[in-house]
Amino acid sequence: MLLKTVQLIFLLQISYAYKVLLVFPVPYRSHAILGEGFVRHLTRAGHEVTYVTPYLIGEAHENLQQIEIGTRGLLDNVVNLKNILNKEMNSAELFNVMMKIVNLTLTDANVTEFLYNKNNIYDVAIIERMFIDVFSGFAAVFNCPYISFFSYHDDMDILELIHEVPNPAYTASVGTTYIPPLSFFERLEQLYLHGFMLIMNQYYIKPKEQAIYRRMFEPIVNSRGGNLPDYDDIRYNASLAFTTSHISYGNSYVHPLALKLIGGFHIDDALKPLPKKLREIMDKSENGVILFSMGSQVTSEGMPEQLKTDLIRIFSQLNYTVLWKLNKLESKFIPGNVKVVPWLPQQSILAHPRCVLFITHGGILSITESVHFGVPIVGIPGFGDQFVNVKTAVKNGYGLEVALSADMGDKLEEALHEVLGNPRFQQRAKAMSLIYHSRVMPPGDEMVFWTEYVVKTRGALHLRSPALSMPLYQKYFLDILATLCILLTIMLFIAKKMFIYLIKEAVENKKNN
Image (cartoon, rainbow, N blue to C red; front, top):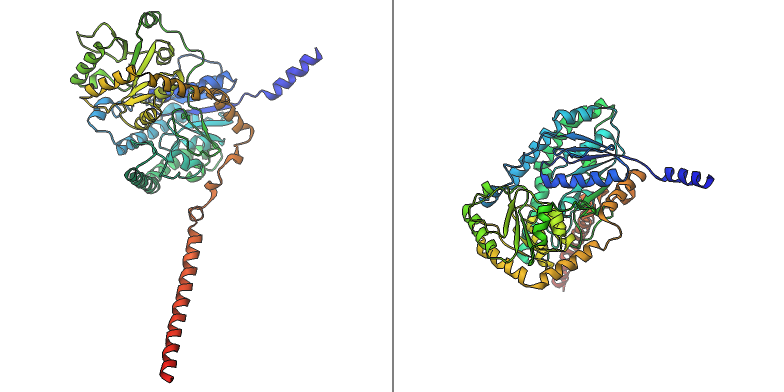
């Protein structure tokens, strides 16, 4: 009895329930899936979670409080197939929309009430960042350490905040359409993009963010008896950075200690079983099943008629069952082997042994899941990081890329026959899946471990990169170069004077002789 009591006391001492704030403000369904992954793992670990999101989780949990943001659907008119095909999307428009999201989020009645409530205290915050740093102000309000979360691969945007800007010769930015190794002109373009973005961030983007940060958060922090930190102090103060990347579908860059790759944490170990009708379809598909999903933003309304016709023609000629995720398809000629449904349990389908191919837009979650379950892909990227994701799959040998266009039918047909007819794609998908699963611990457990670690170590300051506290002129040896240039100039000046003096002496001696 005494031994059991001692064991119980010991367990109580080492088991802590922390208060964790999750801020996931991006009104995009795939981002909500990631947020729900954090909620699931952290609540299972016994922590109290407050989840700020446009997408509420339907299932109640005693350790979960949700704060709804009224921005749901705000990106629908910007990120859609019609705009992508017509090339009407650009980074400037996306930035303006993100700034609108920031303003609407921070003025939302639910959010402001939550921020002004002095009873809310947190041990750590995990804040999603999508090209905007303003939401780091949540950590300033609650005076707690925070972890930045990035829903894309580690690139200059991430590394600049926790370490330093990486070498553009071998790193690819999220918005580019190529990956290392880079050609001469690609390196030239990458160098230009790095320089352009650094200037834009410093002189255009940051001033706008800084103004919003001070206007929105200063009254809140003051009401809680504190002083708002300088914007640069808070945005560079993340204890860690989480990314959805992993070496199996990313790149082998050198990473600082504060960067943790937790790609795949959103995939639940206990997958929900397939609906009965869908399971029967897959079980009876002797040749296999192809999953076709272009993400939540692609609807039939934005799809050109020619493309719909071509897709139906191509799929009808395949000896496979095609599960096509689409809100609706008004066609009397849908072949019997094609099942068009508005929603599909993507992970459960990919986990089925009959799933032989995934036609995808190349979003980071879809790529992660294809590698997790070892399913080859045909990627049709449209915007953002999708190009880098798909090109990495092609480089690793488990997929092919097809350029998105209204007349891509023939190219898609060629790619489908190549991937389905060549066993090397399936073999490479399984090989990448082996690399993906060969980890010290599952990604969800790793995320929980590092979240707890930040609290236990009071911000994990010992993992902070020394590059963050080093001035730019020291980092690039500009002071040493300037000193050497000055010394060289002085030496050349002295040498010149001595040379002139010696010439004059020689001329004088010649005259005297």
